[in-house]
Image 1 (tube, rainbow, N blue to C red):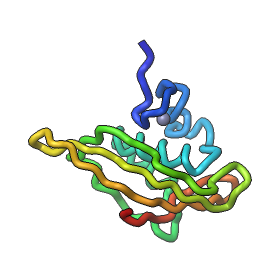
Image 2: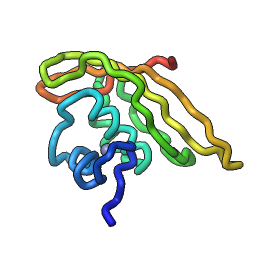
Image 3: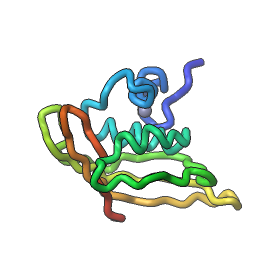
Image 4: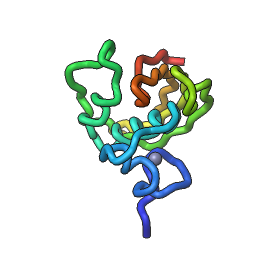
Length: 126
Ligand SMILES: [Zn+2]
C-alpha cells in the first residue's frame, strides 16, 4: 500500500511532498511549500527546511530531535499562487508530548517567491 503523505493531503507521499524534498520539482504555491516543510519537519529533513528558508531569516541550523509531529491542518491561505510574489498560509500543527498528550500550535506563515521558487520568510503565532 502506498504511503500517505505526512502533510495530510489526499495524495501519496510519492506524488505529494517527496518530489519537493528530493528537489525533483519546485512547489508551485505557498501552500504546497508550507505542506512540504511540515513533511520535512516530520522526516527531520534539515537540509530541505534550510534551503526553502529565505536567506534573510534563515537560521544556521535547526534542532529537529524530540518533537513527534502528529498532523497538519491548513486553515487558510492568502495569495501564494503561481502568479503571486508573496503569500500567507495559516495552519495548525499537532504534536505529541512525552506522556502522549496532543498539543497544537497555530501559525500564520509568510512566504515570498524569488526566481520562481517559494521560500519561507517568517511566521507569527496566531
Ligand atoms: Zn504532502
